[in-house]
Length: 78
Image (cartoon, rainbow, N blue to C red; front, side, top):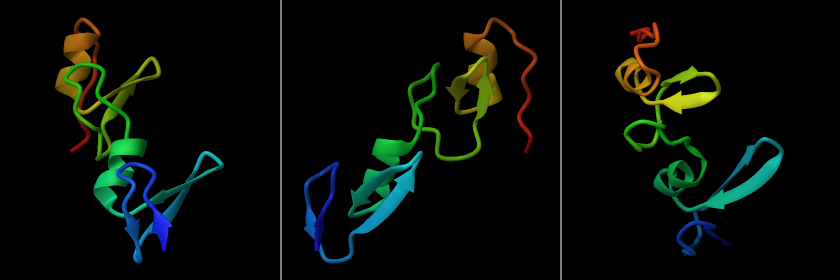
């Protein structure tokens, strides 16, 4: 068993994620997303899908990118 680094739960079905060379242990995808997913620079939600980037900043959608980047020409790729 391993302890989740987010919630501290010692769980027999915990799993490891290696991201950017660092090893992480979680007990759920929710905890993994909480720790590893970027946050939208405009609305603050976790970016769990593709999202978009402008100038190295993450946004959950083109709308948030345009709002934060003063009308930047950003489009969703749906």
